[in-house]
Length: 154
Image 1 (cartoon, rainbow, N blue to C red):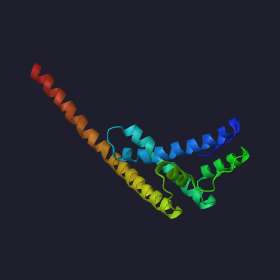
Image 2 (image 1 turned 180 degrees about the vertical axis):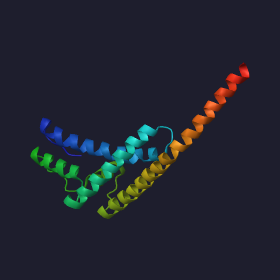
Image 3 (image 1 turned 135 degrees about the horizontal axis):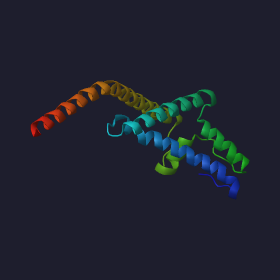
Image 4 (image 1 turned 45 degrees about the horizontal axis):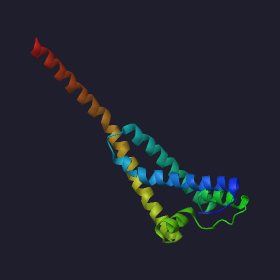
């Protein structure tokens, strides 16, 4: 997104790359909240999503933008480059999709994704609360089936 000179550009480019990776992990991981196949991965992602959303919202409350955008801008300035004053998500949309969304549009999409994440976390929590009772029932059934098989052999 920016051009800098050599090693000086490494830190701000790394911050921008980290920013992109963290956002992609949050958005692309949302379906995990509704998956039943990998409960530990789903739980880890749910914790990540909660932390990501809280940090993001606090950043916007105190800085008016994501703290990583602020850090990257400062690093680009220190590297001797003229960074964009635009939000990271707007710059990514411009680079990837050749469109420049407004800040309002970015916030609305972000709020929609936060809502979906919240629904997913709630879905996971409610499902996990029911699971111990289901496991106990499944365990008894397996034990009873095992005893029946042993008795039928002998």
